[in-house]
Length: 377
Image 1: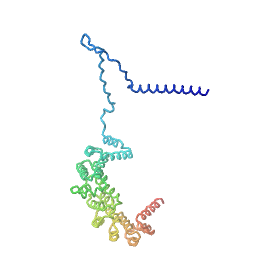
Image 2: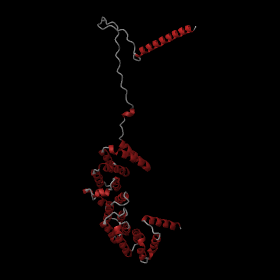
Image 3: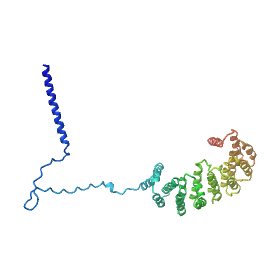
Image 4: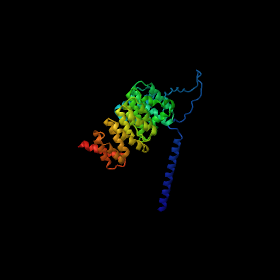
């Protein structure tokens, strides 16, 4: 019985194997034919007809397939990325944050942007705000290349510009230079007088841009750029109006300035006919280097009696306290009674110095806190 079952199992297995082999052969045969391709048909016999044509029905000529047209959008001219970003900046007038974002995008283009393409934009722009962004971007090329010809173009355009607002914008764009522009131009041969001309410009916007440039550039190094400090003093001495001169004297510490520049500030304190300039000079002298402090302290205390304007005397007292800290106490005590109207301010400094502050910043913080308490009372 078991032998019969075994034989039947073998027979069934052989049948299944034959079926599988057949299916496999059929599948391989199908792969040999191209998909969708008709099988070869016997060629019609090549017999000539009575009219001389070959036998068989000729195949009709196939019409050429028309090339598909690109989408309509691809046929439109592509707007230059610079152009589109400039327009985005123009439209973003009401959003300083968005404009900052656009400026960052413009900076990303700078290295790959053809210089002439960018300069053409600078030359053509009339909107002062957009011009400021574009001209600052152009000045950044100087940071990349060190080519002073980049700055020459800005200076030449500034000289040709007749609109005071746009001229001031071009001056301000120099702040985009990594190096202080006032130092760069001072070493630039034929262009070294640019700031000296701008500080006497008839347009107040241009003069304000000069003060703003020196203030911004000095702040990068806590007011300790020697070149910036000395240029600020030199420009203040040349300025044609008191506001500009005073602004320049307050633009930077003169700690890094050498003796000739410090002496120039001392002369302005003594000789300027403008109280605003004398007060600014007095405050500037409070920032001299340690080796100039003793002579400056003595000069301020001697000058106090000769000065008639209270705002200038107040600036002198501040610089005496700043230079001397606790050593200023006997100097201030000697000044009491010179002008009864200033005795209250002298007492204030003496009170503040009684806490023996170690730095000017600490003394200034105490002074501000005292003023807040006084206003609150």
